[in-house]
Image (cartoon, rainbow, N blue to C red; front, side):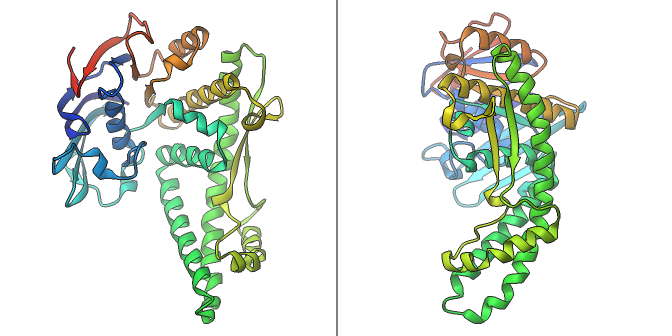
Length: 358
């Protein structure tokens, strides 16, 4: 896909802005706190229906303004699309695609696709399983919209079962309804497991190749899906939930299921999170993000938008050169201070105090 124009009104520190990136590399430069990342945040919102920086949509509305608007004009499979978002302090969020209102956020998944790489994405490698599950879920949701709906249903059933577990001390007669929610969790969870298993297998192949190229073949990166429950079918997953019921009743929460899955990352058989240096962790994160590009193109037939937010200063010259070679066919938005990057072939935009000045 390709962005033809992004228009912002009262979004963060932009009173009004029109941004028309070219098809190749677009370099967005400026000092800190001028609004560079806000442009990427607006694109991300149009892909996922939420910000990657805050859970409060009101934070996206400019100070002392009642509403904000985002308009993203794009081309996908040679078809033009017009996505419009209105965020209101009083009325919440409204999204229209090609003039038609969206009734559910899941309808947005897959329309516009993007891969964002920022310094905080080292958390995929460095932090606990929750960060890697989030990575899995976001990638799968924009590639397979059906997965997003499965995940929504699963999390709804999980919340219902957890609420029930907390209620049983005062309403023990409700215990007979536990199997209803366990059946739903097993059915939905097994489908989610199949998606994740296949995704991790493909991701491992691609990430291993990218990592080998970046590191010069010195180490081998492996991605392995490690489900919380080793279940060959829905029935075995259900049995695991039933077996955990006494512990769940004691702790008033669901202790088994796909919400506790792990995606293990290892270098030469050693866990990167525990044993990798900062350079090794950074290389692994870059390899994963580049693999996202390949996975989305493999499924959709088109490259997603690549957004690199203030990461160039984190990469040495060799990694920068490799990255530049890999992203040539991809529409890319790169934020940096003026001294971080010197790419003569890039279209250059200068941001100052919420305005694109050149």
